[in-house]
Image 1 (cartoon, rainbow, N blue to C red):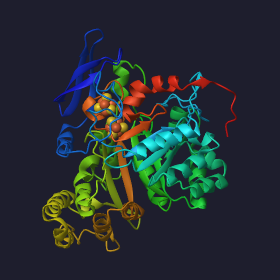
Image 2 (image 1 turned 135 degrees about the horizontal axis):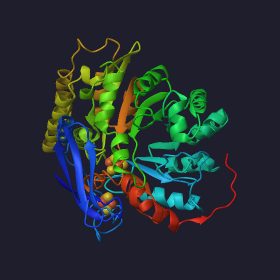
Image 3 (image 1 turned 45 degrees about the vertical axis):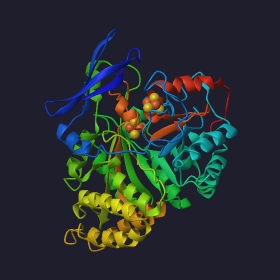
Image 4 (image 1 turned 45 degrees about the horizontal axis):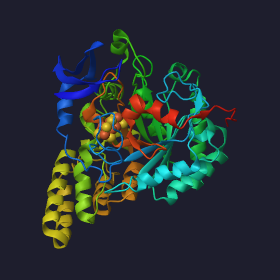
Length: 493
Ligand code: SF4
Ligand code: SF4
């Protein structure tokens, strides 16, 4: 397959080939000035083929912000060529941080300037996101730097809620949350829905490598404080580095199970490389989504297997169904199938049972697409009969013998279709553990086909909305410099 990528040295756009080679998928590219580059794109070609079956459709933004000039990825954005809507928007509220991580992709706290948009600028960015068409962006995440170093964070959360964001999240190292349960309560009262907690494992070594000190005790207190404050939606976010914490996935899953009253999901991010890296180091450290899935299988003794995972955009037919049912556009994560994988796991007396073991997901997705078509064809009158038929047929895709007795999953899933609401989806999250993985791109595996489908974006003070992987590889520096202020001595909480 041909795509466009970037030269890691001069950032010019160059053609790239994505090809199967000895059971793996490899990206090869060549710059006229800086020579050839080769990187593992996906480490399992069979799995890649299965995932690419879900390379379906998307709903493009109707009101792009920038025009096509130099072509992808330089025109962000969102430019008129972009294919997917924003599903989750990041807003970096500061580049200050109270940690100095050697692997920070935002390179926070190492800069010689302060990047800290004003409250008014942040309001403007959120307004842009809520004005997106055909559907407003549903979720915002305050990030950085470390967002909790801003004293007005509760106010920003309140503002986001007032603007109608259904999900308001913070991406945090947890230090401030560990310092004060009262602070966590304040964030919850302001309307915070979810804490994305940087969490690299259950021993001190990964923290010393990735964060420069043993941050584990603080993470545990942060989780305790969320529990005490009734903020019961924590997502653990490990950056996965080969040879550092890739042996701890099983124990992190166990930890989630034990703390599932407050920890709802584990969202793993294989490390992406910032700056240049030599070939042997790249080969040694690169870890891709199939590697992660294989590790899950190995470290859970097969309780969760590779086959239990599906690419993120597979949920497209569900949103088509809800769209037809409710008569309004429902944005869905129509990213490229190579961007991420996920599964839901039911926990039965401490035993892990992926939903795919008792629900025929592919059968249901087909049924969903057919039912959406039927509703679209028959209009209002067809709705009731279509949903009745759908509910009946749905049950034929459930293997009741394999399903744990205590499970109410089929009912919860049918409710997602019928209600099409976030609350219905939240109920599924409450009753399961969500395991996800998104591999953010770097200059070595950068794929324009992927970024042009990106659903995770950054809003910036100049009114742009920029896909996450292009922001962190090529646009961040320029945006931050444009709004930089001289560094002052600021008190860090
Ligand atoms: S990533 Fe999207 S917004 Fe950016 S240039 Fe490519 S198509 Fe346009
Ligand atoms: S953030 Fe990167 S990995 Fe995630 S959807 Fe966007 S392009 Fe894909």
